[in-house]
Length: 141
Ligand code: ZN
Image (cartoon, rainbow, N blue to C red; front, side, top):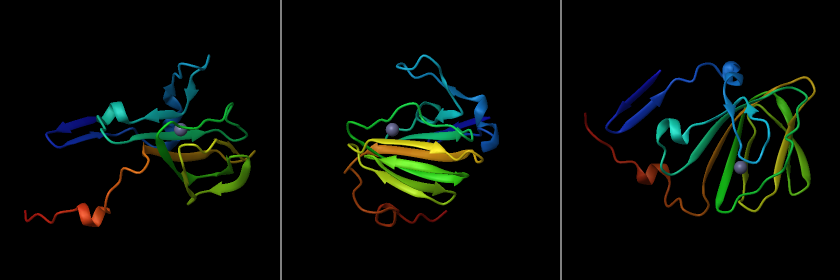
């Protein structure tokens, strides 16, 4: 289901458990990445990219990556695994939130028994001015 208005876009992608129905075709990979849904295009986002991810148990990312300009926030919603930045591995689980600077070389893996469900938000590093409280304007309705 999708709804659009003058000042909003809304998509209902269904339960996180069903994310495996989505597949991301990466231009540099021979196979698509199942369980990954990017929202920028779906919602016409203009200042960030967001992906919803379901990563099966016992799976490792087949590569590491870094970014040119964007920092990333990884928010783990379910499961257990390990995350690596610049060769340093540490455990992640439901409730873990990780910020990775553009130049940080990152990868991750799920535990042998738990799938990982997480959200990744990326935006250009150093561009956020003020906080959401300072930016918000009360409006009487
Ligand atoms: Zn990335």
